[in-house]
Structures are given as structure tokens and as C-alpha cells.
Image (cartoon, rainbow, N blue to C red; front, side):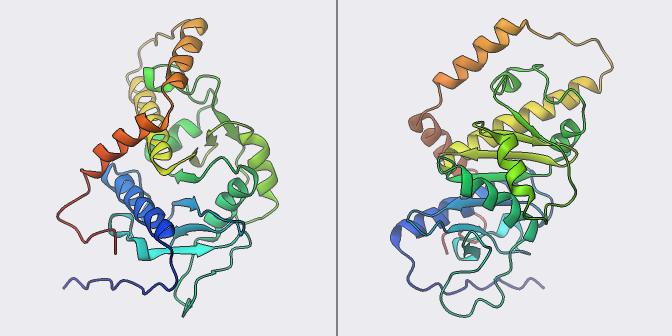
Length: 258
């Protein structure tokens, strides 16, 4: 027998925060739609506007395909839940807090941060060469992808400095032997970046599994393609892609806007 998860009443939530909650819940469901989840063990966060540096992250234990705006937990940069009312059941993933707080503290330009443990992403993260320019999707990240050495489960807060150092000014990073990390100036951009990087990793794993000699475009072609992608990076492009993506998750499930 299926038991419906009841929405958690939220107090004093502004219209702006509610819209961000709805968009972030939708992004969780989009990752579930594309099967980019690892049960309940990965996380997406979104910075809320204002001087208090609060951000939203998933309530630990809620599946991505059932995520709703009210399931998201507002925390500060110290990991404290900062919502009004009874917050005793509002748990967050400790490793998720470490990774996401590091990026939100240092990169004010990145409003949304996505971390995944997909099969393809983990596979590429374990390859010495990292992401190869084997596909057009991969060339979007040519010269624009960071790498962070694996240090164990991200529970130690002192790892935050090294995460930030390795990310630099990039928006995407391979967490070696772990998975992928992507940031965006908006939730739609974060979705677009995640989509492209996941596709690039999946294509690489598929190509290398064939055991045939690979064709790598010349460096100047890779650099030119990366620049072509860079010129397409604007809010209007992300918005229409986001609106198209939302249609894939609307209908047939409990509304994420509750």
C-alpha cells in the first residue's frame, strides 16, 4: 500500500523563495527522469537571495522523483536548519553540506550546484585521462573542466578549501573516483550544464567500450567548438530548454509545487 508523503507546512516563505523551491524541486525530478540519481545519496542546492547566505538542499531520504518544494530544507553555511517551526525531521546529507557550502561560500556567481554519482560520471572520474574530446558534448568543456582528487567521503570541512581551489573559475568539475559537480548562475543553466556533461561522459564510456581506435579532433578544433558553446551561454537559451524539460515531468505525479 502506497502512503502519500504529506507536505511540510512552511512559515514565512516569500514568493521569490517559493519559486526557487519549485524550480529546484523540478530539477530534482528531472535528474530522476534521466536516471542520474543514486537513490538518496546525491544532492542539488540553490542559493537564496539576501545577505544571510542561506541555501536550499534536499531533505535526506526523499527520493528525487517525489521531491516537492516543501521537501527542500533551508540551511545556513554552518549546516544549521534555519526554518521556523518544528525542524526535528529536516535532516540533510552531511557530505552534501560540505561540498555545497564550499561552493556557495566561494562562488557567489553560482546560484545552483548539482552533484551526481552516475555510472558514466563515476567511470570517467576514474579514468586517468579524464574527459576526452570524443564528442561535441565533451568539447563544450574543453579547457573548462576542473578536477579534484578523491579524499574519502566529504565529511571533513577542511576539504572545502581544496574543492574551491580546484574548481577555480570553472563551472564544472570531475570529482575523481567519485562523480561530477556542476554549477550554474541559475537553475536552468545548472540543468543545461549537467545534461551536457552527463551526455559527454556516457558517450565516452560507450566509445571506449568498443575497443576500437578513437578519433580525437585537433586541439584548435576543440578550442573553437568550446568557444562556440560559450557564445551560446545566455539566459534565453537556458530558459527555453528549461521550459521544454519541465514538460517531461508534468502530469502523472504529485505536483512538485506543494
